Amino acid sequence: MTCINSYLTFNGNCREAMTFYQHCLGGELSFETIGESEHADKMPNHMKRSIMHAVLAKDELVIMATDMVEERGLIRGNAIAMMLSCSSEEEARSFYNKLSTGGQPSHPLEVTFLGALFGDLTDRFGNTWLINYDKNKYT
Image (cartoon, rainbow, N blue to C red; front, side, top):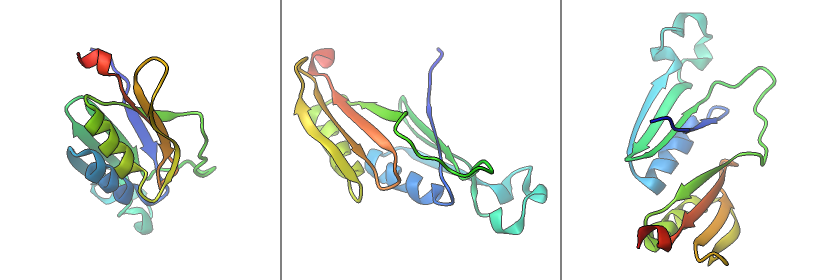
């Protein structure tokens, strides 16, 4: 089955961010540093501890990330958000509360005109999350 996964880029704090996301969402987390990669000998020593590739996986939820930033630097914008489609109201509220810690809640969780519970926030790493629970999908 074809799918799309989130792939986040950080500027040296990938390990911190992905560990935070694991704390909020659960799942198994793995890291490969630049020093552990096949490219280690081509990289400056100060980059060896940077994350080449990280994966957080829990059931169908997969978030990948890296510290590998292009030469022009990291540019954050509001064009991309991560949508969490939750399986219960409790899960949606828990994820919203945890992910907003140290961040900026944009819109609190509330029932929309379509009957779904929805809210959004920007986490402490500058990433936008959309939290959704559609009870009609699970009844």
